[in-house]
Every structure is written in structure tokens, then in C-alpha cells.
Image 1: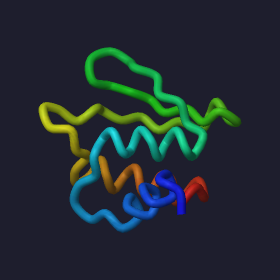
Image 2: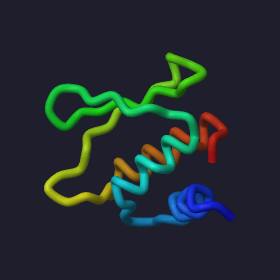
Image 3: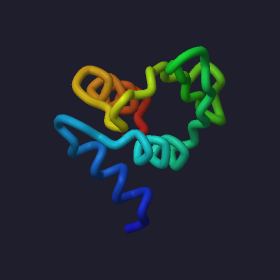
Length: 83
């Protein structure tokens, strides 16, 4: 199992928090690129489909996704069939 596959498995199993840096690795592995927006806003756009977009706010001051943001990432990726 590769590092990316292990991180993907950890994302699926996560219940309360997930490190932002690890999410960046997972999203890159799944074919998404990160676009920085104003302030802490970011959008992940899939390389094969410009309409496949996930909008988030970078967590701060901590470096962990929590609660609703983590849940929305997991639901989005499940709906897209990526996890």
C-alpha cells in the first residue's frame, strides 16, 4: 500500500480531525489541483473535469480540518466516487 493509499484510507476512517497537509496529498493523488482564492478560501479542481470543484476554507490557526468541513470533504468525494 502506497503512502497516498494509506492517507486515503485514513481520511475515510477519520471521525473528528484530519491534517490539512495530508488532505493536500490525498487530493493531489485523486487528481485535484489547488487554487488559492481570496483570504483563506481555496478550491480543488479535478484535472479531468473543470466542473468537479470542491470549495473550502483553509483551517487556521490550526492545521486540521474539523467537524463540518471534514464531513463535507468526505461526502463530496464519496458522491464523486473517488473514495
